[in-house]
Image 1: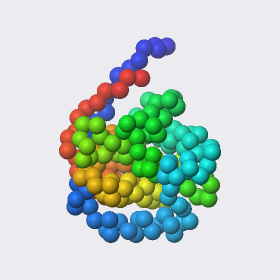
Image 2: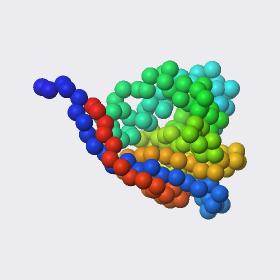
Image 3: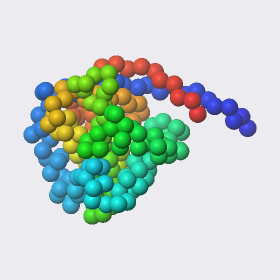
Image 4: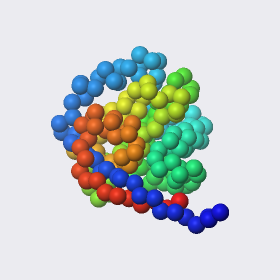
Length: 192
């Protein structure tokens, strides 16, 4: 059996959301839907302040949700913990108060976060949104993504940018529903 890495090509979309024209009121029903299900939204910063094991639990959740994000072949191994901490907790681009978590009681169900964009101080980058598979279809991803937008607007940012593979149909639909526009599409190669 050949164990040499293979290259696989995926179509990737760079998308952007103009926050100056985003109407939060238009999405209020999606936000209420989470509360109506008894879900609470919190942040990594708040959970760390309230629970000694929060960082371990959120790291585990992030990696579990990530396993469903295309390309699946590159998601088999978890993000090394030091890399995750640098990216989302302690690094220059990290915004723990913009790392949103959906919870049902004490159980964490999904995450969505934005990080600083070193190349453009007026923009944030939507880094990842994911929900545990048994909770998909309940509007959790949409509700979490809306919270990142509310955060960005409240903190004076003008735009949120993101890149995703077009095979990630669920997130592509969420982004389009929220008003993200495709700025560029390109083929991207992954080695695995």
